[in-house]
Amino acid sequence: MQKEQKHLEALFKNYQEGQVTEEEKELIAQWLIQLDLKKDLLPQHELEQREVSSRAQLRQYFFPSTKSKPAPLSFSFWLRSAAAVLLISGLGVILFKLQYQAPVRNPVTYTELTANTGEIKTIVLTDGTRVTLNHESKLRYPNVFAGTTREVTLVGQAFFEVAHKANKPFKVHTALLNVQVLGTSFDVKAYPEDPVSDVMVVTGKVGVMAPKVHTAKTYMLLPGEGLSFNHLSGKFKHGPVDVLDNAAWKQGLLVFNNQRLENIILQLKKAYKVKFVFRNKALLDRELNLKIKNENLNVVMKALSIPGEFKYQIEKDTVTLW
View 1 (cartoon, rainbow, N blue to C red):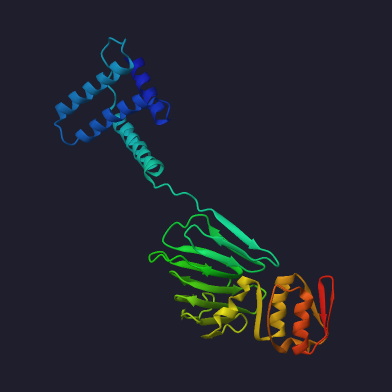
View 2 (cartoon, rainbow, N blue to C red; view 1 turned 90 degrees about the vertical axis):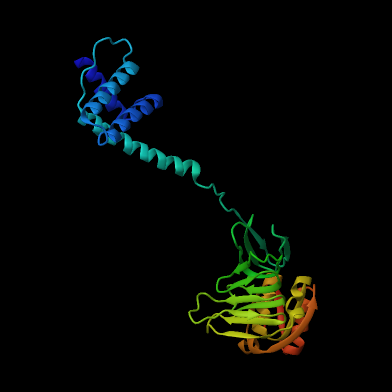
């Protein structure tokens, strides 16, 4: 009997160390928990009978060849073992819920579309939204729009024709501006090297804000309206714009209306992949008008030099003005 008791104690030690089979584990847990739950409800003589019966069942399962009477096990030993069973069982339930009952979410994957110098690219997103990218621009977007919003990130300039979804707003994030719509067409221009970011609305309604500016409010733009944000001063300019001229770049048109030569040069750099050198810095402030399509750089510079009253020279990828 003493040898059998040592075997049983060794069995419970193996159980606590996780070295028993699942079937053995289930039987031990069932017997011990039953004893623990009944100890405060049963009279002493019935509790002793259940203890003897439980030990007999345990001995019969694990030692079927043993014919001698069972040696009494300490009741405190049973209670300590029962506490260990309850702890392990509770952890098992938690792990099961985490592994099998938690909703499985597929990770969101993204694609980045780039329009290089002199390129204009168009893409239709999975929701039906059509996006046209201007020169030297990048659009980062999810391959599938999950959740309650449709969000993309833009560096450069793009024209959006957003598919209408009343319960799923479309958001465009730039370095300094956030634009939100439900279904509309609009243009966003936000090159990091430019001093100003612009938003222009063709159809629908657009909300614009600059989250990094503490005093910024949300501007609501209607068709034919534009918003300019000065990166240095943090000031906004809201008013009417010529939507046809501002969106003409989609057709390969260069349109400049009373624009400073400095701003014109920024756009020519992106379209022709050249750099400009000014011998006369006063030329930067001259305001010019031009509307021209798909012409080589020399034709464009000649068209600008006449009203701008300056001379120029093109050598490889460098244009010098004086």
